[in-house]
Image (cartoon, one colour):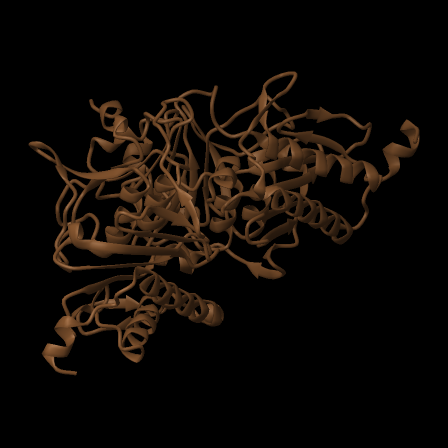
Length: 274
Length: 274
């Protein structure tokens, strides 16, 4: 296909795209389940870095799907980086979000897929599937957010009964030690995309990854799909900076990493103020 | 049945008991799944306290099973407290460990059952089932620990690639802010029994609940089964006190609450020293 043909083409209907994206995730789940007997945690040596068998396998499944079905999309993925196939739109892929949950028997890991152009403000649809349960979150811009076909919405924030989700670990910023003590319950579940979807579906109030250094934090594939799902469910996300909260916006860039505060109800931001 | 008959009787074979305990969990899972359409988070008013529908339902299933099958066991459970049926041995029940995971769509919640007499040192078998996946952990004293029938063992501690699990929240003691930054990965999964079983199966290195006050912390039903499973897999548990670590031991007492450090490899205790 020449550049002219490629420029004009687009997966025109969101519902076609949704169906393709769902089938990609099902293909990953099917391969992951097939191979459950194998040691998924065995490392393989890659050009750039050691990656885990399960991540690489999942990425191959998605890239092959895009190629075999002739989808007019570039691919940006955790392992491969950008595969520029000459199109306007890009499929942003987290092949397995929560790899360490997958290989340790914690049934909370996903494939996360988003399609858009430019940066995260240009994402037009996102799909996140829990590979262990097949629960599927979906949103297309302006059309709302859905879990297994049913509309989902965030909940109003209330301190009593509140649940925050977030990253806890060696790169956590000091302020998290205060914030994690605020809600009734706190969980660190190790899968940002699914944690954001829990906020989107009104099951939790917020998700936070606050790191002490910009060398750590989330990549665009961790959040591109789920942040649209959360927006469409009535919530939002901000990036905390020295000058206050900035609107969440990331390029389609494999190197960029951010801290994020995502909420179902904007009132949450007042609540966590020091 | 009179008191004399009751004193002598005992479920003689551990394998019979295992089969009964597994069927109790399956009955809870089946009821929980039946009722998934209903709002499990709706509160009901109890004599003592508000409890959640799912906890009460699960407890009823277990107590009815014990009565219908004439099992020679007292029952100590989270909701009902001690049901003294006049026997020597007691079934310690956490009907649903991780209620908030269950009602929020996080597939990581269990029923945990232990049988023994006196205190936790007299527990002779324990079973923990993940109700969302049916993964079943089992141990009987001196006979090893098993996941779905396969022997499990803890792993040797190494800092690189380490994963700690634990409680994070408003009652966490200050020292946790240091400890959670030590491993490569930290998770707060909200279900102590399954988290202990991940340590037992060599998928994580340690589980910690360290609270600032003895008004909070774990109950005996949270850990009676899983601590035996962990011991039988090669690990252990201690209670941190001002005078150092004490051996883990709790009475069959609905009021007692403890902080705990559980490990796969005793070398972990050296590693976390301040």
